[in-house]
View 1 (spheres, helix red, strand yellow):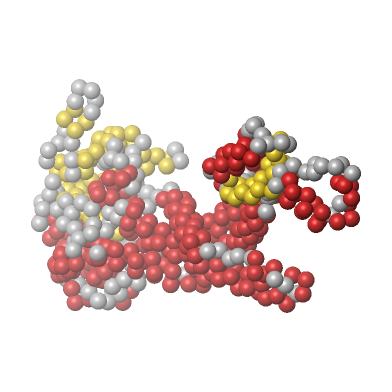
View 2 (cartoon, rainbow over the protein chains, first blue to last red):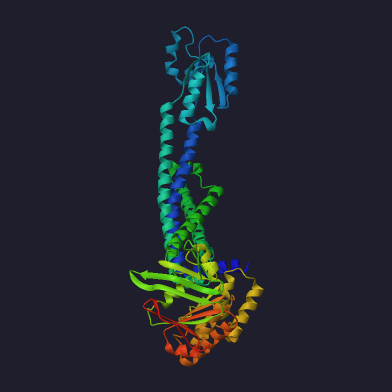
Amino acid sequence: MRTLSYLLREAWANIWTNRTTTVVAIFTTAFTLACVGVFLLLYVNLRAAAGWLQDDIKIMVYLAEGLAGSTVSDIEQQLRADRAVGALHFISKEQALGEFRAQFPADSHLLEGLGQNPLPASFVVTLAPAFRSPDAVRRWAERVAAVTGVAKVDYNQDWLDALSTVIRSIEVVAIGIGLILSAAAVTIIANTIRLTLFARRDEIAILRLIGATKTFIRIPYLLEGAVLGALGSTCSLLMLKALYELFRQQMRTTGRLRGLEQLTVFFPLSICLLLVAIGVILGCAGSFLSLRRFDEAKV
Amino acid sequence: MHLRSQGTICAGETAMIQLVHVTKQYDRRPALCDVTLEIPKGEFVLLMGPSGAGKSTLLRMLIGAERPDAGQVFVNGKNLTTLKGSEIPYHRRKVGTVFQDFRLLEKKSVFDNVALPLLVQGISRTDIRRKVTEALRAVGVEHKRDQLPMSLSTGEQQRVCIARAIVNGPVVLLADEPTGNLDPALTGEIIDLFKLINARGTTVVVATHDPSVMTQVNRRVVTLVRGSLMPELRVGV
Protein backbone atom coordinates (compact mmCIF):
# COMPACT_ATOMS: atom_id res chain seq x y z
CA MET A 1 0.00 0.00 0.00
CA ARG A 2 2.85 2.35 0.95
CA THR A 3 4.66 1.34 -2.23
CA LEU A 4 1.56 2.08 -4.33
CA SER A 5 1.09 5.47 -2.72
CA TYR A 6 4.80 6.18 -3.34
CA LEU A 7 4.46 5.25 -7.04
CA LEU A 8 1.33 7.40 -7.46
CA ARG A 9 3.01 10.33 -5.70
CA GLU A 10 6.05 9.96 -7.96
CA ALA A 11 3.86 9.89 -11.09
CA TRP A 12 2.07 13.05 -9.92
CA ALA A 13 5.46 14.65 -9.05
CA ASN A 14 6.70 13.90 -12.59
CA ILE A 15 3.64 15.56 -14.11
CA TRP A 16 3.75 18.55 -11.76
CA THR A 17 7.51 19.13 -12.08
CA ASN A 18 7.27 19.25 -15.89
CA ARG A 19 3.81 20.82 -16.02
CA THR A 20 4.52 23.11 -18.98
CA THR A 21 5.93 20.25 -21.05
CA THR A 22 3.04 18.07 -19.89
CA VAL A 23 0.39 20.62 -20.95
CA VAL A 24 2.08 21.12 -24.33
CA ALA A 25 2.26 17.32 -24.78
CA ILE A 26 -1.42 16.89 -23.86
CA PHE A 27 -2.54 19.50 -26.39
CA THR A 28 -0.21 18.29 -29.13
CA THR A 29 -1.48 14.75 -28.54
CA ALA A 30 -5.06 16.08 -28.50
CA PHE A 31 -4.62 17.81 -31.88
CA THR A 32 -2.99 14.73 -33.36
CA LEU A 33 -5.72 12.42 -32.08
CA ALA A 34 -8.38 14.94 -33.18
CA CYS A 35 -7.05 14.60 -36.75
CA VAL A 36 -7.51 10.82 -36.44
CA GLY A 37 -10.95 11.52 -34.94
CA VAL A 38 -12.04 13.70 -37.88
CA PHE A 39 -11.37 10.83 -40.26
CA LEU A 40 -13.02 8.37 -37.92
CA LEU A 41 -16.07 10.61 -37.64
CA LEU A 42 -16.18 10.99 -41.41
CA TYR A 43 -15.91 7.22 -41.74
CA VAL A 44 -18.67 6.58 -39.17
CA ASN A 45 -21.02 9.03 -40.96
CA LEU A 46 -20.27 7.73 -44.45
CA ARG A 47 -20.67 4.19 -43.19
CA ALA A 48 -24.06 5.13 -41.74
CA ALA A 49 -25.02 6.81 -45.05
CA ALA A 50 -23.88 3.73 -46.96
CA GLY A 51 -26.04 1.65 -44.61
CA TRP A 52 -29.12 3.71 -45.48
CA LEU A 53 -28.35 3.39 -49.18
CA GLN A 54 -27.92 -0.36 -48.82
CA ASP A 55 -31.28 -0.50 -47.03
CA ASP A 56 -32.78 0.95 -50.20
CA ILE A 57 -31.45 -1.78 -52.46
CA LYS A 58 -34.34 -3.94 -53.61
CA ILE A 59 -33.98 -7.22 -55.46
CA MET A 60 -36.65 -8.13 -57.95
CA VAL A 61 -37.50 -11.83 -58.21
CA TYR A 62 -39.58 -12.18 -61.44
CA LEU A 63 -41.77 -15.25 -61.73
CA ALA A 64 -42.31 -17.32 -64.85
CA GLU A 65 -45.54 -16.93 -66.83
CA GLY A 66 -48.56 -19.11 -66.11
CA LEU A 67 -47.56 -20.38 -62.64
CA ALA A 68 -50.28 -21.97 -60.55
CA GLY A 69 -51.25 -20.14 -57.39
CA SER A 70 -49.87 -23.00 -55.27
CA THR A 71 -46.45 -22.72 -56.95
CA VAL A 72 -46.34 -18.97 -56.24
CA SER A 73 -47.23 -19.75 -52.63
CA ASP A 74 -44.46 -22.34 -52.48
CA ILE A 75 -41.91 -19.83 -53.78
CA GLU A 76 -43.14 -17.25 -51.26
CA GLN A 77 -42.85 -19.80 -48.41
CA GLN A 78 -39.37 -20.69 -49.57
CA LEU A 79 -38.29 -17.04 -49.64
CA ARG A 80 -39.86 -16.26 -46.25
CA ALA A 81 -38.00 -19.23 -44.72
CA ASP A 82 -34.67 -17.91 -46.08
CA ARG A 83 -32.70 -16.20 -43.27
CA ALA A 84 -31.08 -13.88 -45.84
CA VAL A 85 -34.47 -12.34 -46.60
CA GLY A 86 -35.30 -9.34 -44.44
CA ALA A 87 -38.56 -8.26 -46.06
CA LEU A 88 -40.73 -9.55 -48.87
CA HIS A 89 -43.47 -7.97 -50.93
CA PHE A 90 -45.50 -9.68 -53.69
CA ILE A 91 -46.53 -7.78 -56.83
CA SER A 92 -49.06 -9.58 -59.01
CA LYS A 93 -49.23 -9.12 -62.79
CA GLU A 94 -52.20 -6.80 -62.34
CA GLN A 95 -50.45 -4.71 -59.70
CA ALA A 96 -47.37 -4.46 -61.94
CA LEU A 97 -49.51 -3.20 -64.79
CA GLY A 98 -51.27 -0.72 -62.53
CA GLU A 99 -47.92 0.58 -61.25
CA PHE A 100 -46.60 0.89 -64.81
CA ARG A 101 -49.64 2.91 -65.85
CA ALA A 102 -49.35 5.09 -62.77
CA GLN A 103 -45.63 5.75 -63.30
CA PHE A 104 -45.71 6.12 -67.11
CA PRO A 105 -49.21 7.38 -68.04
CA ALA A 106 -47.99 8.74 -71.42
CA ASP A 107 -46.61 5.33 -72.47
CA SER A 108 -49.46 3.14 -71.24
CA HIS A 109 -50.86 2.83 -74.79
CA LEU A 110 -47.77 0.74 -75.68
CA LEU A 111 -49.20 -2.19 -73.73
CA GLU A 112 -52.70 -1.84 -75.22
CA GLY A 113 -51.75 -3.41 -78.56
CA LEU A 114 -50.30 -6.56 -76.96
CA GLY A 115 -53.71 -7.83 -75.98
CA GLN A 116 -52.57 -9.51 -72.77
CA ASN A 117 -50.59 -8.18 -69.79
CA PRO A 118 -46.88 -8.78 -70.59
CA LEU A 119 -45.59 -7.78 -67.14
CA PRO A 120 -44.60 -10.69 -64.87
CA ALA A 121 -45.57 -11.19 -61.25
CA SER A 122 -42.66 -10.61 -58.89
CA PHE A 123 -41.42 -10.53 -55.33
CA VAL A 124 -39.62 -7.39 -54.13
CA VAL A 125 -37.00 -8.60 -51.64
CA THR A 126 -34.97 -6.61 -49.12
CA LEU A 127 -32.09 -8.66 -47.76
CA ALA A 128 -31.20 -8.86 -44.08
CA PRO A 129 -28.29 -6.47 -43.10
CA ALA A 130 -25.78 -9.33 -42.79
CA PHE A 131 -26.41 -10.36 -46.42
CA ARG A 132 -26.05 -7.00 -48.18
CA SER A 133 -22.43 -7.24 -49.31
CA PRO A 134 -22.01 -7.46 -53.11
CA ASP A 135 -20.75 -11.06 -52.89
CA ALA A 136 -23.57 -12.16 -50.59
CA VAL A 137 -26.17 -10.51 -52.85
CA ARG A 138 -24.64 -12.17 -55.95
CA ARG A 139 -24.63 -15.62 -54.30
CA TRP A 140 -28.21 -15.21 -53.07
CA ALA A 141 -29.43 -14.04 -56.51
CA GLU A 142 -27.76 -17.02 -58.22
CA ARG A 143 -29.30 -19.41 -55.74
CA VAL A 144 -32.83 -17.97 -56.09
CA ALA A 145 -32.58 -17.78 -59.90
CA ALA A 146 -32.25 -21.57 -59.90
CA VAL A 147 -35.54 -22.06 -58.04
CA THR A 148 -38.26 -23.60 -60.23
CA GLY A 149 -40.79 -20.97 -61.24
CA VAL A 150 -38.37 -18.05 -60.96
CA ALA A 151 -37.73 -16.47 -64.37
CA LYS A 152 -35.15 -13.85 -63.44
CA VAL A 153 -33.53 -12.14 -60.46
CA ASP A 154 -32.70 -8.50 -61.03
CA TYR A 155 -30.77 -5.97 -58.97
CA ASN A 156 -28.27 -3.16 -59.50
CA GLN A 157 -24.90 -4.96 -59.26
CA ASP A 158 -22.87 -1.92 -60.43
CA TRP A 159 -24.35 0.32 -57.78
CA LEU A 160 -23.63 -2.24 -55.07
CA ASP A 161 -20.04 -2.70 -56.23
CA ALA A 162 -19.42 1.06 -56.38
CA LEU A 163 -20.84 1.57 -52.89
CA SER A 164 -18.72 -1.24 -51.53
CA THR A 165 -15.56 0.19 -53.15
CA VAL A 166 -16.21 3.63 -51.66
CA ILE A 167 -16.67 2.17 -48.16
CA ARG A 168 -13.53 0.05 -48.51
CA SER A 169 -11.48 3.05 -49.72
CA ILE A 170 -12.62 5.16 -46.78
CA GLU A 171 -11.73 2.30 -44.45
CA VAL A 172 -8.21 2.01 -45.89
CA VAL A 173 -7.61 5.77 -45.76
CA ALA A 174 -8.97 5.99 -42.19
CA ILE A 175 -6.78 3.08 -41.03
CA GLY A 176 -3.68 4.46 -42.81
CA ILE A 177 -4.08 7.99 -41.45
CA GLY A 178 -5.03 6.59 -38.04
CA LEU A 179 -1.83 4.53 -37.89
CA ILE A 180 0.43 7.39 -39.00
CA LEU A 181 -1.10 9.89 -36.57
CA SER A 182 -1.13 7.32 -33.75
CA ALA A 183 2.60 6.84 -34.29
CA ALA A 184 2.97 10.63 -34.10
CA ALA A 185 1.06 10.65 -30.79
CA VAL A 186 3.33 7.89 -29.42
CA THR A 187 6.40 9.90 -30.44
CA ILE A 188 5.11 13.08 -28.79
CA ILE A 189 4.40 11.27 -25.52
CA ALA A 190 7.71 9.36 -25.74
CA ASN A 191 9.59 12.67 -26.05
CA THR A 192 7.78 14.14 -23.05
CA ILE A 193 8.60 11.10 -20.93
CA ARG A 194 12.20 11.24 -22.18
CA LEU A 195 12.45 14.80 -20.82
CA THR A 196 11.13 13.62 -17.45
CA LEU A 197 13.55 10.70 -17.42
CA PHE A 198 16.43 13.03 -18.25
CA ALA A 199 15.42 15.43 -15.48
CA ARG A 200 15.27 12.56 -12.98
CA ARG A 201 18.20 10.48 -14.22
CA ASP A 202 20.14 10.88 -10.95
CA GLU A 203 17.17 9.71 -8.94
CA ILE A 204 16.72 6.70 -11.21
CA ALA A 205 20.42 5.87 -10.86
CA ILE A 206 20.04 5.96 -7.06
CA LEU A 207 16.95 3.76 -7.19
CA ARG A 208 18.86 1.23 -9.29
CA LEU A 209 21.76 1.22 -6.83
CA ILE A 210 19.58 0.61 -3.80
CA GLY A 211 17.91 -2.41 -5.38
CA ALA A 212 14.76 -1.10 -7.05
CA THR A 213 13.48 -3.45 -9.75
CA LYS A 214 12.84 -2.27 -13.30
CA THR A 215 9.10 -2.50 -12.70
CA PHE A 216 9.30 -0.30 -9.60
CA ILE A 217 11.27 2.33 -11.52
CA ARG A 218 9.06 2.15 -14.61
CA ILE A 219 5.58 2.33 -13.06
CA PRO A 220 5.51 6.12 -12.33
CA TYR A 221 6.59 6.87 -15.91
CA LEU A 222 4.08 4.43 -17.40
CA LEU A 223 1.37 6.05 -15.26
CA GLU A 224 2.51 9.47 -16.49
CA GLY A 225 2.26 8.28 -20.11
CA ALA A 226 -1.18 6.80 -19.45
CA VAL A 227 -2.40 10.08 -17.93
CA LEU A 228 -0.99 12.06 -20.88
CA GLY A 229 -2.69 9.70 -23.34
CA ALA A 230 -6.03 9.76 -21.49
CA LEU A 231 -6.08 13.55 -21.15
CA GLY A 232 -4.93 13.97 -24.76
CA SER A 233 -7.66 11.73 -26.13
CA THR A 234 -10.33 13.30 -23.87
CA CYS A 235 -9.33 16.78 -25.09
CA SER A 236 -9.42 15.55 -28.69
CA LEU A 237 -12.99 14.25 -28.18
CA LEU A 238 -14.06 17.59 -26.70
CA MET A 239 -12.52 19.40 -29.67
CA LEU A 240 -14.25 17.05 -32.11
CA LYS A 241 -17.60 17.47 -30.37
CA ALA A 242 -17.25 21.26 -30.54
CA LEU A 243 -16.34 21.09 -34.25
CA TYR A 244 -19.22 18.67 -34.91
CA GLU A 245 -21.76 20.97 -33.24
CA LEU A 246 -20.35 23.95 -35.17
CA PHE A 247 -20.70 21.99 -38.42
CA ARG A 248 -24.32 21.07 -37.62
CA GLN A 249 -25.05 24.70 -36.76
CA GLN A 250 -23.62 25.79 -40.12
CA MET A 251 -25.72 23.18 -41.97
CA ARG A 252 -28.87 24.35 -40.18
CA THR A 253 -28.29 27.93 -41.29
CA THR A 254 -27.38 26.98 -44.86
CA GLY A 255 -30.67 26.72 -46.80
CA ARG A 256 -29.86 23.95 -49.27
CA LEU A 257 -28.39 21.57 -46.65
CA ARG A 258 -31.12 22.15 -44.05
CA GLY A 259 -32.37 18.88 -42.64
CA LEU A 260 -29.20 17.02 -43.56
CA GLU A 261 -27.75 17.74 -40.10
CA GLN A 262 -30.39 15.39 -38.68
CA LEU A 263 -28.65 12.52 -40.49
CA THR A 264 -25.16 13.16 -39.09
CA VAL A 265 -24.03 11.22 -36.02
CA PHE A 266 -21.32 11.69 -33.37
CA PHE A 267 -19.45 8.80 -31.72
CA PRO A 268 -21.59 6.79 -29.30
CA LEU A 269 -20.38 6.61 -25.68
CA SER A 270 -18.80 3.17 -26.24
CA ILE A 271 -16.60 4.54 -29.06
CA CYS A 272 -15.69 7.60 -26.93
CA LEU A 273 -14.54 5.29 -24.12
CA LEU A 274 -12.67 3.14 -26.63
CA LEU A 275 -10.86 6.24 -27.96
CA VAL A 276 -9.84 7.25 -24.41
CA ALA A 277 -8.60 3.67 -23.85
CA ILE A 278 -6.62 3.88 -27.10
CA GLY A 279 -5.13 7.16 -25.82
CA VAL A 280 -4.07 5.38 -22.61
CA ILE A 281 -2.49 2.55 -24.63
CA LEU A 282 -0.66 5.00 -26.91
CA GLY A 283 0.58 6.90 -23.82
CA CYS A 284 1.87 3.73 -22.19
CA ALA A 285 3.52 2.72 -25.48
CA GLY A 286 5.28 6.12 -25.65
CA SER A 287 6.52 5.74 -22.06
CA PHE A 288 7.64 2.20 -22.69
CA LEU A 289 9.68 3.26 -25.75
CA SER A 290 11.48 5.95 -23.77
CA LEU A 291 12.08 3.62 -20.83
CA ARG A 292 13.52 0.96 -23.13
CA ARG A 293 16.03 3.47 -24.50
CA PHE A 294 16.78 4.84 -21.05
CA ASP A 295 17.40 1.36 -19.65
CA GLU A 296 20.22 0.93 -22.13
CA ALA A 297 22.12 3.69 -20.30
CA LYS A 298 24.31 2.38 -17.48
CA VAL A 299 24.08 3.33 -13.76
CA MET B 1 38.76 -21.19 -2.79
CA HIS B 2 38.16 -24.54 -4.45
CA LEU B 3 38.83 -25.40 -8.06
CA ARG B 4 36.59 -28.00 -9.66
CA SER B 5 37.91 -30.37 -12.27
CA GLN B 6 35.80 -28.77 -15.05
CA GLY B 7 37.22 -25.36 -14.31
CA THR B 8 34.21 -23.98 -12.39
CA ILE B 9 35.32 -21.92 -9.44
CA CYS B 10 33.33 -21.94 -6.19
CA ALA B 11 33.47 -19.27 -3.53
CA GLY B 12 35.10 -20.33 -0.32
CA GLU B 13 32.71 -20.78 2.60
CA THR B 14 34.15 -17.96 4.66
CA ALA B 15 34.78 -15.55 1.79
CA MET B 16 32.28 -12.70 1.46
CA ILE B 17 33.92 -11.31 -1.67
CA GLN B 18 36.04 -13.12 -4.24
CA LEU B 19 37.52 -11.96 -7.50
CA VAL B 20 39.17 -14.66 -9.57
CA HIS B 21 41.47 -13.57 -12.40
CA VAL B 22 39.22 -10.63 -13.20
CA THR B 23 40.03 -8.52 -16.24
CA LYS B 24 38.12 -5.51 -17.55
CA GLN B 25 38.89 -3.11 -20.38
CA TYR B 26 37.25 0.11 -21.56
CA ASP B 27 37.98 0.91 -25.21
CA ARG B 28 41.01 -1.41 -25.08
CA ARG B 29 42.36 0.48 -22.03
CA PRO B 30 42.79 -1.93 -19.12
CA ALA B 31 40.79 -1.00 -16.00
CA LEU B 32 41.48 -4.26 -14.13
CA CYS B 33 44.23 -6.74 -15.07
CA ASP B 34 43.98 -10.32 -13.82
CA VAL B 35 42.85 -9.32 -10.33
CA THR B 36 42.45 -12.14 -7.81
CA LEU B 37 41.26 -11.10 -4.38
CA GLU B 38 39.48 -12.70 -1.42
CA ILE B 39 37.82 -10.81 1.41
CA PRO B 40 36.52 -12.93 4.29
CA LYS B 41 33.22 -12.28 6.09
CA GLY B 42 33.42 -9.46 8.62
CA GLU B 43 36.69 -8.01 7.31
CA PHE B 44 37.46 -4.29 6.91
CA VAL B 45 39.48 -3.65 3.76
CA LEU B 46 40.89 -0.41 2.49
CA LEU B 47 41.15 -0.32 -1.30
CA MET B 48 43.89 2.19 -2.09
CA GLY B 49 45.20 3.57 -5.35
CA PRO B 50 45.50 6.74 -7.38
CA SER B 51 42.65 8.06 -9.52
CA GLY B 52 42.06 5.79 -12.51
CA ALA B 53 43.63 2.76 -10.80
CA GLY B 54 40.40 0.71 -11.17
CA LYS B 55 38.97 1.07 -7.64
CA SER B 56 35.55 2.27 -8.79
CA THR B 57 35.43 -0.37 -11.53
CA LEU B 58 36.08 -3.04 -8.90
CA LEU B 59 33.33 -1.68 -6.62
CA ARG B 60 30.89 -1.44 -9.56
CA MET B 61 31.56 -5.11 -10.26
CA LEU B 62 30.66 -5.96 -6.68
CA ILE B 63 27.19 -4.42 -7.13
CA GLY B 64 26.66 -5.99 -10.55
CA ALA B 65 26.89 -2.69 -12.45
CA GLU B 66 29.79 -4.03 -14.54
CA ARG B 67 30.64 -7.50 -15.75
CA PRO B 68 34.25 -8.60 -16.17
CA ASP B 69 35.63 -9.37 -19.63
CA ALA B 70 37.31 -12.40 -18.07
CA GLY B 71 37.33 -14.05 -14.63
CA GLN B 72 34.59 -14.41 -12.04
CA VAL B 73 33.18 -12.29 -9.23
CA PHE B 74 31.53 -13.76 -6.14
CA VAL B 75 29.72 -11.78 -3.45
CA ASN B 76 27.90 -13.39 -0.55
CA GLY B 77 28.08 -16.78 -2.29
CA LYS B 78 26.57 -15.50 -5.57
CA ASN B 79 28.47 -15.58 -8.83
CA LEU B 80 27.75 -12.11 -10.24
CA THR B 81 29.28 -13.06 -13.57
CA THR B 82 26.36 -15.38 -14.30
CA LEU B 83 23.67 -13.51 -12.36
CA LYS B 84 20.61 -12.58 -14.49
CA GLY B 85 19.83 -8.89 -14.92
CA SER B 86 16.52 -9.37 -13.12
CA GLU B 87 18.33 -10.78 -10.06
CA ILE B 88 20.74 -7.87 -9.66
CA PRO B 89 18.29 -5.60 -7.74
CA TYR B 90 17.86 -8.37 -5.15
CA HIS B 91 21.67 -8.69 -4.84
CA ARG B 92 21.99 -4.92 -4.35
CA ARG B 93 19.54 -5.04 -1.45
CA LYS B 94 22.18 -6.99 0.48
CA VAL B 95 24.99 -4.59 -0.40
CA GLY B 96 25.07 -1.05 0.99
CA THR B 97 26.80 1.64 -1.08
CA VAL B 98 28.25 4.97 0.01
CA PHE B 99 29.43 7.61 -2.48
CA GLN B 100 31.73 10.58 -2.41
CA ASP B 101 28.94 12.83 -3.78
CA PHE B 102 26.36 11.31 -1.35
CA ARG B 103 23.69 10.91 -4.07
CA LEU B 104 20.81 12.00 -1.88
CA LEU B 105 17.47 13.10 -3.32
CA GLU B 106 17.35 16.85 -2.79
CA LYS B 107 13.57 17.14 -2.73
CA LYS B 108 13.06 14.40 -0.18
CA SER B 109 13.60 14.68 3.57
CA VAL B 110 16.41 12.86 5.36
CA PHE B 111 13.86 10.32 6.60
CA ASP B 112 12.49 9.67 3.09
CA ASN B 113 15.99 9.32 1.65
CA VAL B 114 16.94 6.69 4.20
CA ALA B 115 13.55 4.97 3.82
CA LEU B 116 14.00 4.54 0.05
CA PRO B 117 15.79 1.13 0.10
CA LEU B 118 13.02 -0.24 2.35
CA LEU B 119 10.28 1.29 0.25
CA VAL B 120 11.46 -0.43 -2.93
CA GLN B 121 11.17 -3.74 -1.07
CA GLY B 122 7.60 -3.10 0.02
CA ILE B 123 8.43 -3.10 3.77
CA SER B 124 5.55 -2.09 6.06
CA ARG B 125 5.17 1.49 7.27
CA THR B 126 5.82 0.51 10.91
CA ASP B 127 9.00 -1.40 10.09
CA ILE B 128 10.23 1.44 7.88
CA ARG B 129 9.75 3.94 10.72
CA ARG B 130 11.58 1.69 13.18
CA LYS B 131 14.50 0.79 10.89
CA VAL B 132 15.03 4.32 9.58
CA THR B 133 15.03 5.70 13.13
CA GLU B 134 17.60 3.07 14.16
CA ALA B 135 19.84 3.83 11.16
CA LEU B 136 19.66 7.60 11.71
CA ARG B 137 20.43 7.10 15.41
CA ALA B 138 23.40 4.86 14.55
CA VAL B 139 24.99 7.59 12.43
CA GLY B 140 23.99 10.42 14.77
CA VAL B 141 21.60 12.45 12.62
CA GLU B 142 18.25 11.37 14.05
CA HIS B 143 17.43 14.96 14.98
CA LYS B 144 17.73 16.00 11.29
CA ARG B 145 15.15 13.50 10.03
CA ASP B 146 12.67 16.07 8.69
CA GLN B 147 15.20 18.34 7.03
CA LEU B 148 16.15 18.40 3.38
CA PRO B 149 19.66 17.13 2.54
CA MET B 150 20.80 20.49 1.16
CA SER B 151 20.23 22.12 4.55
CA LEU B 152 22.77 19.74 6.15
CA SER B 153 26.56 20.04 6.37
CA THR B 154 28.66 17.79 4.12
CA GLY B 155 29.55 15.58 7.07
CA GLU B 156 25.87 15.19 7.96
CA GLN B 157 24.99 14.44 4.34
CA GLN B 158 27.58 11.68 4.30
CA ARG B 159 26.11 10.28 7.51
CA VAL B 160 22.67 10.24 5.91
CA CYS B 161 24.18 8.43 2.92
CA ILE B 162 25.70 5.85 5.31
CA ALA B 163 22.35 5.51 7.12
CA ARG B 164 20.69 4.75 3.77
CA ALA B 165 23.39 2.16 3.03
CA ILE B 166 22.95 0.32 6.35
CA VAL B 167 19.18 0.62 6.85
CA ASN B 168 18.66 -2.74 5.10
CA GLY B 169 21.18 -4.50 7.34
CA PRO B 170 23.52 -5.29 4.43
CA VAL B 171 26.11 -8.06 4.57
CA VAL B 172 28.62 -5.88 2.71
CA LEU B 173 29.16 -2.12 2.82
CA LEU B 174 31.01 -0.58 -0.13
CA ALA B 175 32.22 3.01 0.05
CA ASP B 176 33.72 4.82 -2.96
CA GLU B 177 35.86 7.77 -1.82
CA PRO B 178 33.50 8.44 1.11
CA THR B 179 35.79 11.07 2.62
CA GLY B 180 36.70 12.82 -0.62
CA ASN B 181 34.54 15.87 0.19
CA LEU B 182 35.31 15.98 3.93
CA ASP B 183 37.94 17.74 6.05
CA PRO B 184 40.34 15.58 8.17
CA ALA B 185 38.24 15.84 11.36
CA LEU B 186 35.07 14.75 9.59
CA THR B 187 37.04 12.04 7.76
CA GLY B 188 37.99 10.58 11.15
CA GLU B 189 34.36 10.59 12.27
CA ILE B 190 33.18 8.82 9.13
CA ILE B 191 35.97 6.21 9.37
CA ASP B 192 34.96 5.60 13.00
CA LEU B 193 31.41 5.03 11.81
CA PHE B 194 32.60 2.44 9.28
CA LYS B 195 34.59 0.70 12.02
CA LEU B 196 31.49 0.61 14.19
CA ILE B 197 29.43 -0.90 11.36
CA ASN B 198 32.23 -3.42 10.74
CA ALA B 199 32.30 -4.33 14.43
CA ARG B 200 28.64 -5.39 14.12
CA GLY B 201 29.69 -8.02 11.56
CA THR B 202 29.29 -6.21 8.23
CA THR B 203 32.12 -6.65 5.73
CA VAL B 204 33.36 -3.17 4.81
CA VAL B 205 35.34 -2.15 1.71
CA VAL B 206 36.41 1.48 1.52
CA ALA B 207 38.01 2.74 -1.70
CA THR B 208 40.15 5.86 -1.38
CA HIS B 209 43.12 7.59 -2.93
CA ASP B 210 43.84 9.49 0.31
CA PRO B 211 46.86 7.94 2.15
CA SER B 212 45.86 9.68 5.41
CA VAL B 213 42.81 7.40 5.61
CA MET B 214 45.16 4.38 5.81
CA THR B 215 46.61 5.53 9.14
CA GLN B 216 43.11 6.14 10.52
CA VAL B 217 41.82 2.73 9.49
CA ASN B 218 44.72 0.51 10.54
CA ARG B 219 43.38 -2.57 8.78
CA ARG B 220 44.08 -4.65 5.67
CA VAL B 221 45.12 -2.52 2.69
CA VAL B 222 44.72 -3.65 -0.91
CA THR B 223 46.40 -1.42 -3.47
CA LEU B 224 45.52 -1.13 -7.13
CA VAL B 225 47.83 0.55 -9.61
CA ARG B 226 46.76 0.80 -13.26
CA GLY B 227 44.33 -2.04 -12.75
CA SER B 228 46.78 -4.45 -11.13
CA LEU B 229 46.95 -5.53 -7.49
CA MET B 230 50.11 -4.65 -5.58
CA PRO B 231 51.52 -6.76 -2.73
CA GLU B 232 49.25 -6.37 0.30
CA LEU B 233 49.90 -4.40 3.45
CA ARG B 234 48.26 -5.21 6.76
CA VAL B 235 48.45 -2.31 9.19
CA GLY B 236 47.59 -3.15 12.81
CA VAL B 237 44.27 -4.96 13.42
